[in-house]
Image (cartoon, rainbow, N blue to C red; front, side):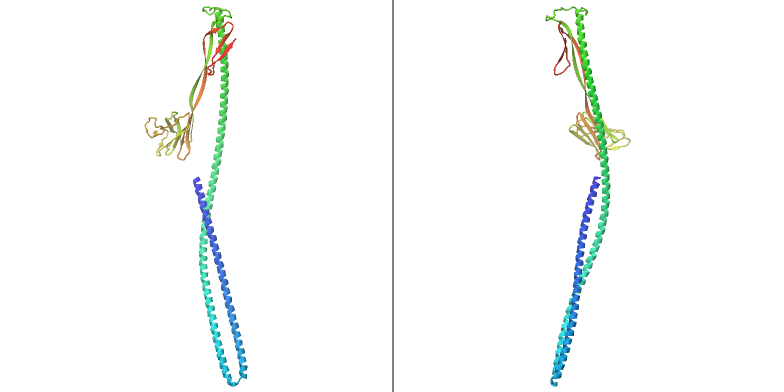
Length: 433
């Protein structure tokens, strides 16, 4: 699920980068279209300016033609007046000269007019061709830009739809992650609550054990005191019997209290012996059909059992045993299949057992570690723990008292009673006056 979420995020980032690229291309195309439009406007303005100049030149030409005609008419009028004033002999010469001058002026005017017309027409045609060519180029560029914009919009819409789909998948995955986190938090809370209950029960049990041990020690102290009193009274009674000749034995020689000799008396010695017994306690859990039924504390084997009704393929599963700081992992072959009700034993390499699949498997060079606290876990191919077994050593201590009686010396003035409890620090004495 995390890989799908990472892949979705990567595709989302890729789509965002493509959208950014398309957006930048769209902005570049828009700027290029704006420049083309601006150039088209400039060319249109230039065309209008040229047309205005052509019109002004035409008007100027008409104006000059009218001015020239008026000058000709005025010259003609003036010449006619002069002709009327000049002699008739010179009239023909002046008329011929006037005609030649008029003809020459007409030729010059027409030549100039033709040159101006040709120049204006060539300039107009050239500008018009340039404008038409630029217009065609702009139209082609505009069509290419429109097509590119259409493609960009289609790609952008597809990327947007894909982005929306990925966003939906991301939202669903995030919701699933939140749900799993909430479930994990609930399970952790329940687990912590169970641990707290277990700790409280353990504390309660420890308190009860401490109280019982204290009561037992008090009872043992009372018992020891009673045994001491009984031994003291028994020694007194035996002394009295010996003094009164009631014991049937020969009467020993009695001396005065100041003498150094005394009567032999029994002294009671109480010794305490402690015995420690060690046993192992085991906790086992299994979430599936395969369970760990037994693990040797000496590190010889680990035994599995299929308690279900179907075959279980344990190929690729891991059997991990941790003892103290040591940890050994055994991986099952991919073809290992456990039948219903069958026990499978994994032996250490030093167990002197023959490899006999599918019930007995011997490790090649590994040995199960040994410790006072051993934990074995069975992990499937998905990394989930399906079974576990924990074995730890529990040490219980018991103590007992033993009373030994033997003869001792008893003085007439003072009687001493020694009491030995087996304390390694020394012996304690109880004196009865």
